Length: 307
Image 1 (cartoon, one colour):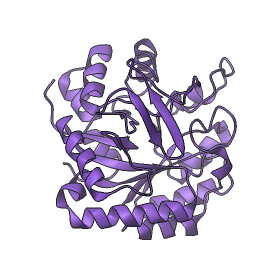
Image 2 (spheres, one colour):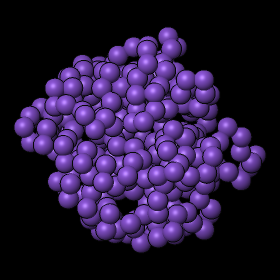
Image 3 (cartoon, one colour):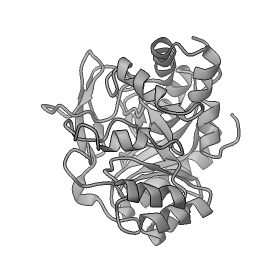
Protein backbone atom coordinates (compact mmCIF):
# COMPACT_ATOMS: atom_id res chain seq x y z
CA UNK A 1 0.00 0.00 0.00
CA UNK A 2 1.52 3.31 -1.12
CA UNK A 3 0.24 6.40 0.69
CA UNK A 4 1.39 9.85 1.74
CA UNK A 5 3.86 9.80 4.65
CA UNK A 6 2.21 8.81 7.91
CA UNK A 7 2.29 10.65 11.23
CA UNK A 8 2.46 8.63 14.44
CA UNK A 9 1.49 10.39 17.67
CA UNK A 10 2.80 7.68 20.01
CA UNK A 11 6.31 6.32 19.43
CA UNK A 12 8.19 5.10 22.51
CA UNK A 13 11.13 3.69 20.57
CA UNK A 14 12.06 2.12 17.24
CA UNK A 15 14.68 0.00 15.47
CA UNK A 16 16.07 -1.33 18.74
CA UNK A 17 16.30 2.16 20.27
CA UNK A 18 14.46 2.97 23.51
CA UNK A 19 13.55 6.66 23.59
CA UNK A 20 13.13 6.42 27.39
CA UNK A 21 16.84 5.65 27.91
CA UNK A 22 18.64 8.54 29.67
CA UNK A 23 21.74 7.49 27.72
CA UNK A 24 19.98 7.80 24.35
CA UNK A 25 22.55 9.03 21.83
CA UNK A 26 22.07 11.26 18.82
CA UNK A 27 23.35 8.47 16.57
CA UNK A 28 20.81 6.00 17.99
CA UNK A 29 17.97 8.47 17.60
CA UNK A 30 19.03 9.13 14.00
CA UNK A 31 19.10 5.38 13.31
CA UNK A 32 15.56 5.06 14.65
CA UNK A 33 14.38 8.03 12.58
CA UNK A 34 15.96 6.71 9.40
CA UNK A 35 14.23 3.36 9.92
CA UNK A 36 10.90 5.08 10.61
CA UNK A 37 11.20 6.80 7.23
CA UNK A 38 11.61 3.41 5.55
CA UNK A 39 8.21 2.49 6.97
CA UNK A 40 6.52 5.47 5.28
CA UNK A 41 6.50 7.57 8.44
CA UNK A 42 7.15 11.26 7.88
CA UNK A 43 6.64 12.56 11.41
CA UNK A 44 6.14 11.45 14.99
CA UNK A 45 5.49 12.62 18.49
CA UNK A 46 8.38 11.14 20.43
CA UNK A 47 6.65 9.70 23.46
CA UNK A 48 8.02 9.69 26.98
CA UNK A 49 6.27 7.52 29.54
CA UNK A 50 5.84 7.96 33.28
CA UNK A 51 8.94 9.09 35.13
CA UNK A 52 9.95 11.70 37.70
CA UNK A 53 9.67 15.29 36.53
CA UNK A 54 13.44 15.85 36.89
CA UNK A 55 14.15 12.80 34.72
CA UNK A 56 11.63 13.83 32.07
CA UNK A 57 13.09 17.33 31.92
CA UNK A 58 16.60 15.97 31.45
CA UNK A 59 15.47 13.70 28.61
CA UNK A 60 13.67 16.55 26.86
CA UNK A 61 16.67 18.86 27.09
CA UNK A 62 18.90 16.17 25.61
CA UNK A 63 16.59 15.32 22.72
CA UNK A 64 16.09 19.00 21.94
CA UNK A 65 19.85 19.32 21.67
CA UNK A 66 19.90 16.46 19.16
CA UNK A 67 17.08 18.04 17.15
CA UNK A 68 18.92 21.34 16.99
CA UNK A 69 22.03 19.60 15.66
CA UNK A 70 20.33 17.49 12.98
CA UNK A 71 17.62 18.82 10.64
CA UNK A 72 16.53 15.27 9.79
CA UNK A 73 15.75 14.64 13.45
CA UNK A 74 14.00 18.00 13.74
CA UNK A 75 11.80 17.19 10.76
CA UNK A 76 10.79 13.73 11.95
CA UNK A 77 10.35 14.53 15.65
CA UNK A 78 7.62 17.16 15.35
CA UNK A 79 7.16 17.28 19.11
CA UNK A 80 6.56 15.26 22.23
CA UNK A 81 3.78 13.21 23.74
CA UNK A 82 3.92 12.82 27.52
CA UNK A 83 2.06 9.68 28.58
CA UNK A 84 2.17 10.14 32.32
CA UNK A 85 2.97 10.63 35.12
CA UNK A 86 -0.62 11.84 35.60
CA UNK A 87 -2.24 8.42 35.14
CA UNK A 88 -4.26 6.08 37.33
CA UNK A 89 -2.14 4.06 39.76
CA UNK A 90 -4.87 1.42 40.15
CA UNK A 91 -4.03 -2.19 39.21
CA UNK A 92 -4.92 -2.91 35.60
CA UNK A 93 -5.15 0.75 34.67
CA UNK A 94 -1.51 1.79 35.04
CA UNK A 95 -0.38 -0.96 32.64
CA UNK A 96 3.40 -1.01 32.13
CA UNK A 97 3.79 2.41 33.77
CA UNK A 98 5.37 2.44 37.25
CA UNK A 99 2.40 3.07 39.54
CA UNK A 100 4.57 4.42 42.36
CA UNK A 101 5.53 7.44 40.20
CA UNK A 102 1.99 8.59 39.46
CA UNK A 103 1.23 12.13 40.61
CA UNK A 104 -1.63 14.56 40.22
CA UNK A 105 -1.35 17.15 37.42
CA UNK A 106 0.77 20.18 38.28
CA UNK A 107 0.74 23.25 36.04
CA UNK A 108 4.12 24.52 37.26
CA UNK A 109 5.70 21.12 36.59
CA UNK A 110 4.26 21.08 33.08
CA UNK A 111 5.56 24.60 32.40
CA UNK A 112 9.02 23.43 33.47
CA UNK A 113 8.83 20.46 31.10
CA UNK A 114 7.60 22.65 28.26
CA UNK A 115 10.62 24.94 28.69
CA UNK A 116 12.89 21.88 28.63
CA UNK A 117 11.14 20.76 25.44
CA UNK A 118 11.62 24.08 23.70
CA UNK A 119 7.86 24.52 23.59
CA UNK A 120 7.40 21.30 21.60
CA UNK A 121 5.19 19.23 23.92
CA UNK A 122 2.11 18.73 21.75
CA UNK A 123 0.10 16.11 23.65
CA UNK A 124 -0.32 14.97 27.25
CA UNK A 125 -2.16 11.79 28.21
CA UNK A 126 -3.70 11.82 31.67
CA UNK A 127 -6.37 10.29 33.88
CA UNK A 128 -8.89 13.12 34.42
CA UNK A 129 -10.14 11.68 37.71
CA UNK A 130 -6.93 12.92 39.36
CA UNK A 131 -7.29 16.10 41.47
CA UNK A 132 -6.83 19.35 39.58
CA UNK A 133 -7.28 17.79 36.14
CA UNK A 134 -9.84 20.27 34.72
CA UNK A 135 -7.65 23.24 35.64
CA UNK A 136 -4.60 21.48 34.21
CA UNK A 137 -6.38 20.63 30.93
CA UNK A 138 -7.57 24.23 30.63
CA UNK A 139 -4.01 25.48 31.22
CA UNK A 140 -2.65 23.25 28.44
CA UNK A 141 -5.47 24.10 26.04
CA UNK A 142 -4.73 27.81 26.47
CA UNK A 143 -1.15 27.06 25.38
CA UNK A 144 -2.28 25.07 22.33
CA UNK A 145 -1.35 21.69 23.84
CA UNK A 146 -3.80 18.81 23.35
CA UNK A 147 -4.81 16.45 26.13
CA UNK A 148 -5.97 12.84 25.87
CA UNK A 149 -7.52 10.46 28.34
CA UNK A 150 -5.68 7.21 28.94
CA UNK A 151 -4.95 4.72 31.73
CA UNK A 152 -8.06 6.06 33.42
CA UNK A 153 -11.32 5.00 35.02
CA UNK A 154 -12.96 8.43 34.97
CA UNK A 155 -16.64 8.66 35.82
CA UNK A 156 -19.19 10.36 33.60
CA UNK A 157 -19.04 13.46 35.81
CA UNK A 158 -15.25 13.56 35.60
CA UNK A 159 -15.43 13.16 31.82
CA UNK A 160 -17.92 16.03 31.62
CA UNK A 161 -15.52 18.30 33.49
CA UNK A 162 -12.50 17.25 31.42
CA UNK A 163 -14.26 17.72 28.08
CA UNK A 164 -15.57 21.13 29.16
CA UNK A 165 -11.98 22.07 30.03
CA UNK A 166 -10.65 21.04 26.61
CA UNK A 167 -9.97 17.27 26.54
CA UNK A 168 -10.14 16.11 22.90
CA UNK A 169 -8.51 12.69 22.43
CA UNK A 170 -8.54 9.12 23.75
CA UNK A 171 -5.13 7.43 23.94
CA UNK A 172 -5.13 3.78 22.70
CA UNK A 173 -8.84 3.35 23.40
CA UNK A 174 -9.62 -0.21 24.48
CA UNK A 175 -6.30 -0.62 26.27
CA UNK A 176 -4.77 0.53 29.54
CA UNK A 177 -7.63 -1.19 31.38
CA UNK A 178 -7.93 -4.36 33.50
CA UNK A 179 -8.54 -7.67 31.75
CA UNK A 180 -11.96 -7.87 33.45
CA UNK A 181 -14.38 -4.94 33.60
CA UNK A 182 -18.02 -4.39 34.58
CA UNK A 183 -20.18 -5.64 31.72
CA UNK A 184 -21.75 -2.31 30.77
CA UNK A 185 -20.54 0.56 32.93
CA UNK A 186 -16.84 0.66 32.09
CA UNK A 187 -14.41 3.24 30.75
CA UNK A 188 -14.34 1.76 27.23
CA UNK A 189 -18.10 2.13 26.84
CA UNK A 190 -18.06 5.59 28.42
CA UNK A 191 -15.45 6.83 25.95
CA UNK A 192 -16.99 5.22 22.87
CA UNK A 193 -20.21 7.07 23.66
CA UNK A 194 -18.48 10.46 23.81
CA UNK A 195 -18.88 11.90 20.33
CA UNK A 196 -16.83 14.94 21.36
CA UNK A 197 -13.69 12.83 21.75
CA UNK A 198 -11.51 11.51 18.94
CA UNK A 199 -10.55 7.87 19.51
CA UNK A 200 -7.03 6.67 18.76
CA UNK A 201 -6.65 2.92 18.14
CA UNK A 202 -3.71 0.53 17.77
CA UNK A 203 -4.59 -1.63 14.72
CA UNK A 204 -2.19 -4.51 15.31
CA UNK A 205 -4.87 -7.17 15.79
CA UNK A 206 -3.63 -7.73 19.35
CA UNK A 207 -4.46 -4.63 21.37
CA UNK A 208 -7.92 -4.69 19.80
CA UNK A 209 -8.78 -7.73 17.65
CA UNK A 210 -10.03 -6.95 14.12
CA UNK A 211 -13.70 -7.56 14.91
CA UNK A 212 -13.50 -5.44 18.04
CA UNK A 213 -11.81 -2.66 16.07
CA UNK A 214 -14.68 -2.72 13.56
CA UNK A 215 -17.24 -2.42 16.36
CA UNK A 216 -15.34 0.36 18.10
CA UNK A 217 -14.87 2.35 14.89
CA UNK A 218 -18.59 2.05 14.09
CA UNK A 219 -19.33 3.64 17.46
CA UNK A 220 -17.47 6.84 16.59
CA UNK A 221 -18.72 9.65 14.32
CA UNK A 222 -17.02 10.23 10.95
CA UNK A 223 -13.69 11.95 11.35
CA UNK A 224 -13.31 10.91 14.99
CA UNK A 225 -10.98 7.93 14.47
CA UNK A 226 -7.18 8.00 14.28
CA UNK A 227 -4.54 5.27 14.29
CA UNK A 228 -1.21 4.95 16.08
CA UNK A 229 1.33 2.22 16.77
CA UNK A 230 2.24 2.91 20.43
CA UNK A 231 5.43 1.16 19.36
CA UNK A 232 8.56 0.55 21.38
CA UNK A 233 12.11 -0.44 20.52
CA UNK A 234 11.13 -3.78 18.92
CA UNK A 235 9.30 -2.03 16.07
CA UNK A 236 11.37 -2.18 12.92
CA UNK A 237 13.74 -4.58 14.67
CA UNK A 238 12.40 -8.11 15.27
CA UNK A 239 11.98 -10.68 18.08
CA UNK A 240 14.19 -10.42 21.14
CA UNK A 241 14.53 -8.65 24.48
CA UNK A 242 14.32 -4.88 24.67
CA UNK A 243 13.71 -2.16 27.22
CA UNK A 244 11.06 0.47 27.62
CA UNK A 245 12.18 2.67 30.46
CA UNK A 246 12.76 0.53 33.53
CA UNK A 247 11.11 -2.56 32.10
CA UNK A 248 12.73 -5.39 30.21
CA UNK A 249 10.37 -6.50 27.45
CA UNK A 250 10.21 -9.72 25.50
CA UNK A 251 9.00 -9.86 21.89
CA UNK A 252 8.29 -13.26 20.35
CA UNK A 253 8.03 -14.34 16.76
CA UNK A 254 4.33 -13.46 16.97
CA UNK A 255 5.29 -9.79 17.42
CA UNK A 256 3.54 -9.50 20.80
CA UNK A 257 5.29 -7.21 23.28
CA UNK A 258 5.04 -8.41 26.87
CA UNK A 259 6.77 -8.21 30.20
CA UNK A 260 8.47 -11.60 30.59
CA UNK A 261 6.07 -14.03 32.24
CA UNK A 262 3.17 -11.55 32.13
CA UNK A 263 -0.03 -11.41 30.09
CA UNK A 264 -0.32 -7.65 29.73
CA UNK A 265 1.04 -5.78 26.70
CA UNK A 266 3.77 -3.16 27.01
CA UNK A 267 3.53 -1.21 23.79
CA UNK A 268 3.68 -2.80 20.35
CA UNK A 269 6.08 -3.80 17.59
CA UNK A 270 3.75 -2.29 14.98
CA UNK A 271 4.92 0.04 12.20
CA UNK A 272 2.71 2.66 10.57
CA UNK A 273 2.79 1.08 7.11
CA UNK A 274 1.51 -2.18 8.65
CA UNK A 275 -1.03 -0.26 10.76
CA UNK A 276 -2.44 1.37 7.61
CA UNK A 277 -2.57 -1.94 5.74
CA UNK A 278 -4.36 -3.59 8.67
CA UNK A 279 -6.90 -0.78 8.98
CA UNK A 280 -7.65 -0.91 5.27
CA UNK A 281 -8.12 -4.68 5.32
CA UNK A 282 -10.15 -4.94 8.52
CA UNK A 283 -12.36 -1.88 8.06
CA UNK A 284 -12.71 -1.97 4.25
CA UNK A 285 -11.93 1.75 4.21
CA UNK A 286 -10.79 3.41 0.99
CA UNK A 287 -7.12 4.30 0.76
CA UNK A 288 -7.83 8.02 1.10
CA UNK A 289 -9.62 7.56 4.43
CA UNK A 290 -6.92 5.29 5.85
CA UNK A 291 -4.19 7.68 4.73
CA UNK A 292 -5.94 10.58 6.46
CA UNK A 293 -6.49 8.69 9.72
CA UNK A 294 -2.80 7.73 9.75
CA UNK A 295 -1.48 11.10 8.65
CA UNK A 296 -3.19 14.38 7.81
CA UNK A 297 -6.03 13.96 10.32
CA UNK A 298 -3.53 13.14 13.07
CA UNK A 299 -1.62 16.34 12.38
CA UNK A 300 -4.85 18.32 12.33
CA UNK A 301 -5.99 16.84 15.66
CA UNK A 302 -2.71 17.98 17.19
CA UNK A 303 -2.87 21.45 15.69
CA UNK A 304 0.15 20.80 13.46
CA UNK A 305 0.55 22.08 9.93
CA UNK A 306 0.20 19.53 7.11
CA UNK A 307 3.34 17.54 6.41
